[in-house]
Image (tube, rainbow, N blue to C red; front, side, top):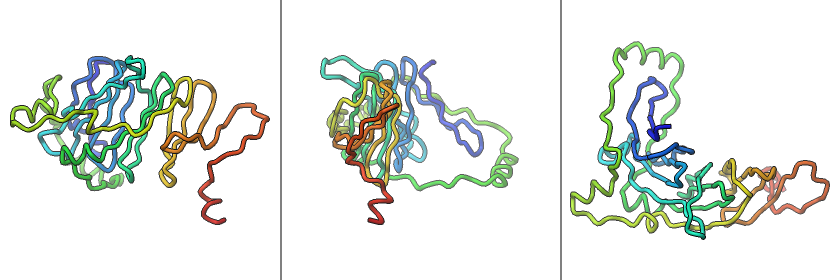
Length: 235
């Protein structure tokens, strides 16, 4: 409720750092694999990208970029869910107005020199016990300035500031539901499943083409464009 994001080492149960920058409640969190980046959204329509370990120290637990989720009427809409497609460097947001937006990370990671993080395997129970036995104190990380960002950091170095909407270009936008409540990516097909308050479940391409709709109590047959992975593989 205070807008602070606490990042924990789930293996040791240690607090690694605190991301401060949201002035109101946070509505959504998502790690944008394979990069050491955390995406967060709040009830004011803000979308923030944070550096997390093993990101460079200059951006760790700092708000690197902040944008507003603006509708066509120039008013903001709260992001309620998000998804990412690591193979294509794309992340997707769904908001309370029923809009879905896809944005590219390619220019952004190039601009800020963010490298993919090595994948960490979940430790076994025995490893966790051994690691926790050797831990006697829980370090408290230094809290960053609540209004600091990577742009503030590069301003002092004389580096050129980046336009956040230019380095995070929107690829596609479409109206999906009356309100997008949840979404899940189909990684093998680069497609998206969404759920809305209109009691519908829809499958989309990343270009905004509806491939199929699930309706409660629906008795009318609808031709689907979506092809299940098993049918495509063994046809």
